[in-house]
Image (tube, rainbow, N blue to C red; front, side, top):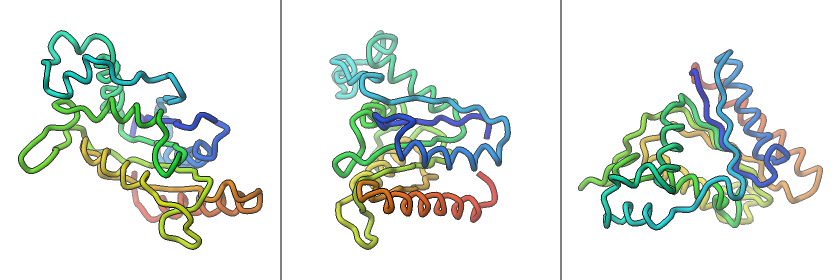
Length: 209
């Protein structure tokens, strides 16, 4: 592994629990791959545009992308897809907002999941055109989810991220989470310890990444 792209999706940036957990993942990867280059992308509010009319028209099949792919949000989409294509690993540090991904991460997804570019529509379904790569999702949540006890809220984040990444060809995905961060300092410390142990166990169980 020579290059890793890390997305930081929390508005709290480096002060967030998801960033802290992504640091643990990154630390294991850097231990295995000394000298790996890390590309950092902060997906805070306003850093990625929402799709403009030309982008929407191309996605809807109403216009050819010819002449449009060097301007507006199609150009931004192309830049973000190439940035992803140029990496060997992906880390996404994200909070759970209202049971799913925050809007900043959704904007990135809308740019990199692009018909006739990162996936092809076929009679058998959508086929991703990007190379698979080890992908690690570090999630923080104020509540608890995922079927454990006590599970107090639904989870639309993990199945959604798995589905959209699968769409573009990324299937090697591992999820880690800090849950119940809003339940007080003692609960947060326990959640951090459990998440760190989960990351360590994952890397101990695999020979290479």
